[in-house]
Image (cartoon, rainbow, N blue to C red; front, side):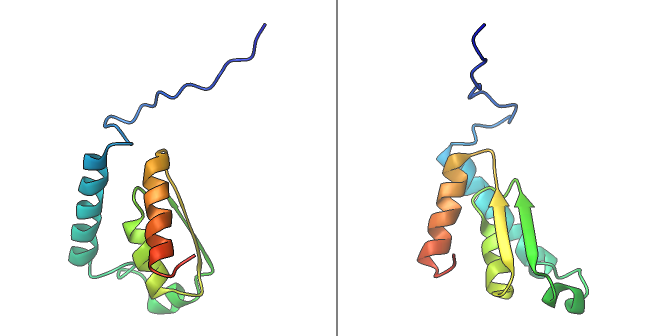
Length: 100
């Protein structure tokens, strides 16, 4: 019996590798962030400044985590997404903005 090969199919309703979807997610993140008053604005500032590690599951193109990285430069921040193109884009944006 041969081992099953992983399928490239996902249950994501929209093509996660689509440039259009990436642009939509970036626009959506910017709107949410602006209207919520910034990243983690609803949290106690004392708690936020003591964050050491943050994981963003389904990070998309990384807009939120990039904003968080600027707000908390000493915090270890990791983004995970189903889409390789989304994480590649987020990684490139981080690199070009001097974040690692």
